[in-house]
Length: 271
Image (cartoon, rainbow, N blue to C red):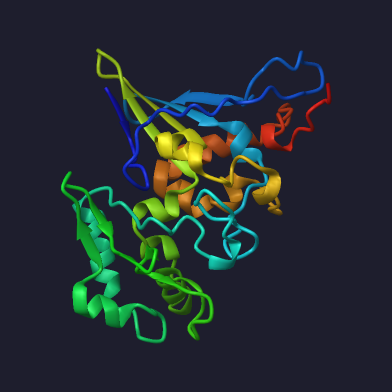
């Protein structure tokens, strides 16, 4: 059995996008999308963790409002929508309840679309049973548009920062988990193997082929000043737990490690 976090919108799970070989010193250059994984067993349950060490050590950061080209089939940096164009899918009822709890704390100064939410609500129930945030004028109802006095971007993020709280405690789960993807695979004996890796273009399904740009596919977003496992420390601890996070960091920072560069940062040899 395999379980994954839901896709940002309805999409099949197959992608025809072909990865390209990367050149790394000392290797043949025949490896496609070359990553190193670290693996260890959970000390408290029957689970093996498989973690993408290459991505965790990389310099990726969210560049929302700093050159992010969005998730349409053409570049739209001027819209300042990031990956908020399609609204957020909820993981479960607890995820919905958490958002509802924080919606009541949003003020008119923090949430541009609050009047529209008051009229028609902020959630949408789909025929397949999924619940998502409503879309208004082509994007999530919680996205403040450029020019809004309270600030462009996620209303939850803005309000949480003003309250001195963590934005991840306010947002739908998928919004703070991206670009981290969690996959659980259970074998016939009940042992679980959990993969923690970057969210790739293929994870959008067939719709991923139409994306003009995706932030883990190009060097644009690999401009952070610290590695992902530090940059997304709170998000990682929330995702895997403090014990597993500490074990991961211990392996990532071992002195004998020679990190493999992220594929999108490796210069491809011409010819």
